[in-house]
Structure formats: C-alpha cells, structure tokens
Image (tube, rainbow, N blue to C red; front, side, top):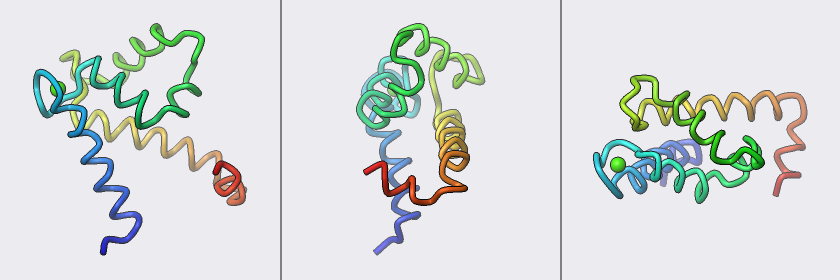
Length: 104
Ligand SMILES: [Ca+2]
C-alpha cells in the first residue's frame, strides 16, 4: 500500500494522462484537454485564478504554461504548474496548519 504522498504523485501522473490521451498527441494537453482538466480536477483553484475573466485568463495561463510554445502542455509543463500551485499552498498554510482542516 503506497503512502499518501506516493499516492498523490501517482495521481498527478494518472490525472495528466486521463486528459492528455483524449485527442491529438496523447502525451500532451491541448487547450481543450487542459480546460477540462482544470474544470474537473482543480475547480476551486481554477475559480480562484479569476472567474470574471475566465476565457482571457485561460488563454494567458496556457501561454504561461506552454514554455516551448507548441500550443500544447506537456507533462513537464503540467508538473511545473502543479508545483507553482503547491508553492502557493505552502505560503497559505505554512504558518497556520489549522487552515488545512478548515477547508473541508
Ligand atoms: Ca492530447
């Protein structure tokens, strides 16, 4: 039985492939695949990013994530994105661990 952190890492990988395999290159997220992943797997974070400017923000996010500018998000770019979000979580939680329980 894998430990929670190991499970979390496996989930990051399987979640990427669940969406990247839907169309085109099965190892990269197209715009549509990325949008669906954000909507279904990171809905709170996606709303937090900027619900008013939903589509403009999405375009910008895609451009920011797509470091090699091939209009798709590969696994490395996706992991960098998750790492950035995790750093945000760290800033939010580091001085007050009780926040982690309040979110439920
Ligand atoms: Ca794809």
